[in-house]
Image (tube, rainbow, N blue to C red):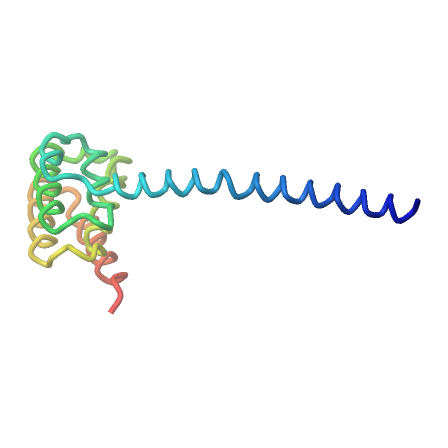
Length: 150
């Protein structure tokens, strides 16, 4: 009688274990498919860069580690053309939107596909359009270049 109860308990635990393993394994395959689809959509086709002129989509292109040098150049040119003027200072403080530009400067300096010509061109154009922010732009470029590994 005791051995029968022991065998039934082991079988019950084995069934519960099989169900739990199935529940853990089955959703992970769906998640991995989603991850694969998402990573393949990270690369932005070149035709879409010209269509995407809003600041956030251009910023996403710059932050994407897989962006090519050509895509980076086009995104930076579009930022200068359409979003080059930073809001005026709020007294002594920089406008809160300037943090987005600092992020772009910092990111472009650290990007593996960014060239020195690209960085210098963007720096000059942004500084020429926003002379009030010259010191902050130079500081962001310096921090970005210093953080770039040797």
